Length: 430
Image 1 (spheres, rainbow, N blue to C red):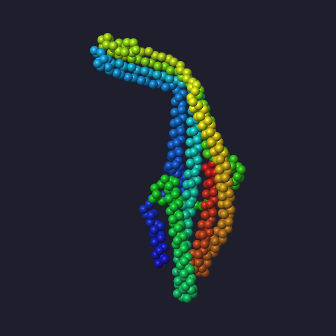
Image 2: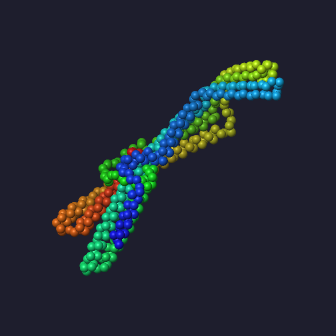
Image 3: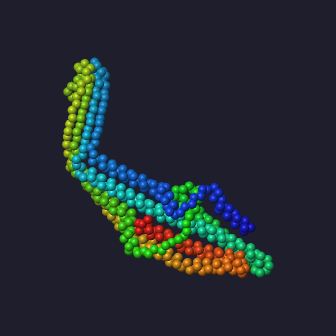
């Protein structure tokens, strides 16, 4: 019966494989796909493009504007003959001075463009760290599921062996019940391990924007290279490279330009203009622009142009400009406070990642000695098995102990790799 249950578990676990697409990815390939297809990254990239177009929009005020206006009217019943009137107006306007608003708007949009770039950099770093964690979580979950499957099979073999011994009177019934309970627990652990693997698979698919039915087969091993780190140097590196710091620096510059833009509302504006007017009619243009029917149907063109210089100064606007300046100054103060807060947050994040990295190294060192012992034990069991001293079940026990020790080593390396990824993110590295 236990064998049937185990077979059903294996069939249910393997069933989706036959109807789903499988792709084999390394961690580098998974990160590349995430950076290419993840919608959070694409949305932030779109914001960067929009910010670039806003710079072009700000530059438009530097150049002159050209407007054309044309019209045609046909008057009936006013005179003996129908009267037609055609008018055109062409206007060229060039802003000469706007209280510093134009240049500060250009600089403001340039700084906002850098803000969006730094936000995109932060999104990329966060995605990279999340994909790496999801990838190694899936890799570890699959190994954990395989280990639990081996435990189920080994426990089932022990149960069969003890049943034979029970029939021959070598063990009491309580021993059978004990092994049956162990097998039941092992089966539950195996089901839970499969669920963990499925959850990790769903998370990775979501980050990579893959279809929910796609099965990612992570290709890689839990290998590590120990690195020496110094907290003080890492903190200085973080202050230099973290995109959030550079984001707030750019936002601070943008807020300063925003203050100048607000101040420009109370300064004079000067612009030059040239306008050309033309009018043609089937009658005569009289005083005040009225049309008479005395022309006998001939067309008359009247055109002229004007050149002007306009000076405008808002002497009093109900303190509107003053209020806008004060709001912009508050925005600048908020940005500075957010920057100071972010520096504190980065220091805490970096400290946690630094301690996790050191703890990961210590865990690996602790489990490596146990792994060496169980590998030697498995090697001895194999030799004794060849000599007929150890049974197949005894060899299976030794292999299972070695597998458990290897999993603990991989689990420790997993913790180290996640800590390393978090540390690199905390320092603003890649």
